[in-house]
Image (cartoon, rainbow, N blue to C red):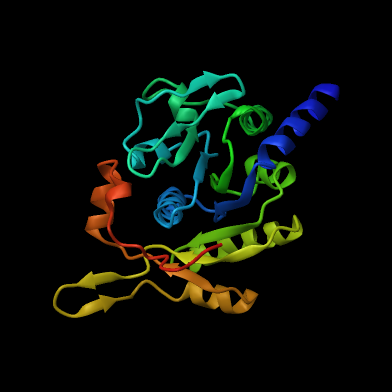
Length: 252
């Protein structure tokens, strides 16, 4: 118990240096949470804010891939572990992928994941940040619970696609956040539409996100298109070079 109290105190001290903590979740896999987390971090960094990005998806980390940093390694410092800096905007990034060999699966049960997450929160030296973005794993289990219990989050952004099936799962995540007394800042609709060179914007995937936003009184923060350009930048690890800013003037 004393050890847990000590870790909680360290987490409180580390998080106290960060002005705003925002989690990105959906309750469902495959909707592009990591891409949205990375785009949001780049959006804020472009505006001159000091930004950190925590990849809290221990079983399927992908943030380093998006930034072309798979082979980077964090360094130890007098205050813990220093995050790895992204190339263009010096976003401070931490991921379990930095510490595991390529292709090796992280085979951990929930309690182990929660313990490692708490250690990350307690020992990563984020320094003074304007924003810390937390990329959540799918579901409403151990990691989201631990994050909401240990971090005084300023809010959660939900990621959805227009499909009705996705909306029904995201709805559970919204209710989880509200049960944990965490504000839902809004919904980002990923794969919202695609751009036809001849006929313009086409949205034929459903209206699930819009109906969900209306039901819970939430705003649609951004609509991210399904496009080859974004996919190519993600696959190449060049997400900082992607020129479009779908968040526009959004400041959480």
